[in-house]
Amino acid sequence: MYKLSGVTKNYQKGRGTVAALRGVDLVVEDGEWLSIQGPTGHGKSTLLQILGGLDRPSGGVVDFDGRDLAQLREAEVTKVRAESIGFVFQTFNLIPTLSAQENVETALVPLHVSATARRQRAAIALEAVGLADRLRHVPGELSGGQQQRVAIARALVKEPKVLLADEPTGNLDEDTRDEIIALLDTMWRERGLTMVFVTHDSTVARRAQRIGVMKNGRLTIKKTASSRAARTVPASQAAAPQPDDVDPDDPSALGLDADADSATADD
Ligand code: ADP
Ligand code: MG
Image 1 (spheres, rainbow, N blue to C red):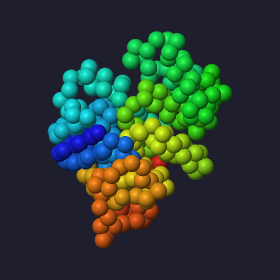
Image 2 (cartoon, protein in one colour):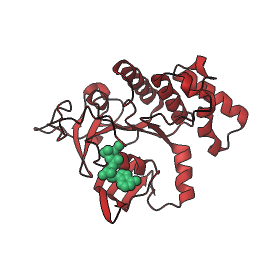
Image 3 (cartoon, helix red, strand yellow):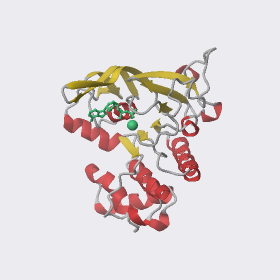
């Protein structure tokens, strides 16, 4: 699905430069679930934006199914994104004046789906996330967990290959977090999705098949997660367990700052 090599990203900040990514190499196989942990400010969101074609790297190759997102023309990147990549954010990013159904429909507009088909597909997508009785509600009339369900329906209504999520449970309480992760787990199992999650939350991270850690703009694959996460990815694609394998619940073992799990501001 993805093959990244030597991906760098520099941001101009005043007269200086911030090196947000310092050479990331990463392979994400079709159907894999990868989570990425790490302290705030170390490049996780930057990497996810580049995977999603929302931003371009300063250097390196971002191969997505055989095409380099770093080199494609803007219109082509937009097309790839509209067709193949779903995005879920910590803050839901719904349009406050639109109903749940209309919010989901927005994902189908660039795909030139007819208005009737848009309405139908949005209703089916909302039903799939348990919101069949909330189609007409605007975001302000929905709980945080319900808003994230709408955002998941919006991300999946176009039947993308990939779902990218940046702290998808960062604004939710624990019970709601568990519901949302269970929902995403179901979607992943049923739809053959490839998923890449950025999260501070070890409970969320360890649901994935592999866990990577971003530190100072570099990514290290630390561990194959629990066997319960196994779906269809062949063993050859999983990181081989190392004698010094670390416990993903132990922040110090992952090289994270001690407070990484409690941090909430992460933009
Ligand atoms: P994380 O998601 O791990 O918290 P980010 O990818 O958001 O980290 O940020 C990595 C680094 O890049 C930080 O130092 C951040 O301040 C900087 N950065 C991110 N986005 C921008 C931007 N648009 N302009 C300037 N600097 C940025
Ligand atoms: Mg971030």
